[in-house]
Image (cartoon, rainbow, N blue to C red; front, side):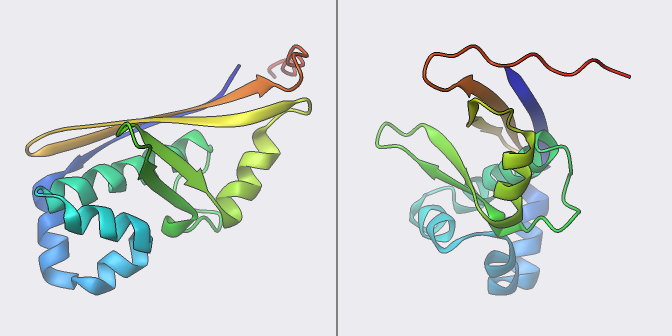
Length: 144
């Protein structure tokens, strides 16, 4: 069952200007050390940062909060599997929020996809609640 969905579109040139203006102050405020290592190894460093920015925005939307209510940029981090597939990890308040959203008897799985076509970077995040031990997920409460 899907319990959250979010998307974001970031302007790569805007991220480049922000990096030029604020440098490490911006990097260290928004990106984890692992995200910074990944971006700095890439030929398209700025595009890599822009995609991760978009992913964090999309994840915060999927959590139903946006970047408010105590969520921190570094509570959400994008890394890659050996196959290159991006994965999102959450910690801190983002993990607490995810735990609140996840129905009993299920475990949350965060799906993320990233793309870019200069000057745009885009991310989609879908949070799925999967049944644990083959049990069906409980029904959602009625709306209203």
